[in-house]
Image (cartoon, rainbow, N blue to C red; front, side):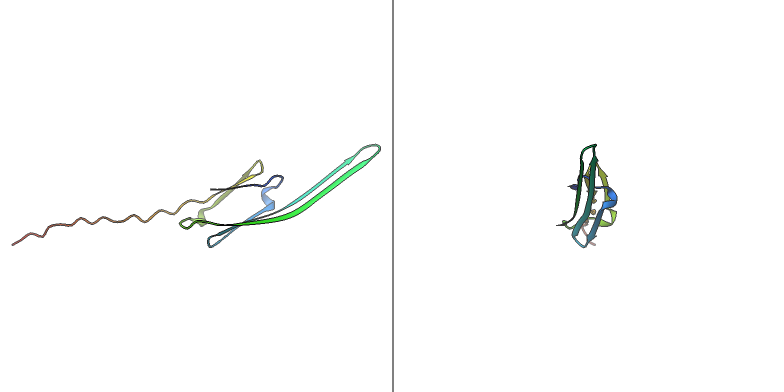
Length: 97
């Protein structure tokens, strides 16, 4: 599971890419605020882009990755691949004739 705090972003503002063992999360924030009163006007604009990359451990099923976003927190769930279990072979005694 990977969690990232992305305050003020909507799911459409975020791009997630997994290439090999590299996870990249990109986003862009655009915020405008304007206050008009009788004797003054206040206006603020904030823009910015970000990109973060992390190396994922091996043994993950990246094709089954799911992403959800709630209250500014992005949660990626990437299931682990099933481990190959060793096969036990029972040794039988050969009958003598």
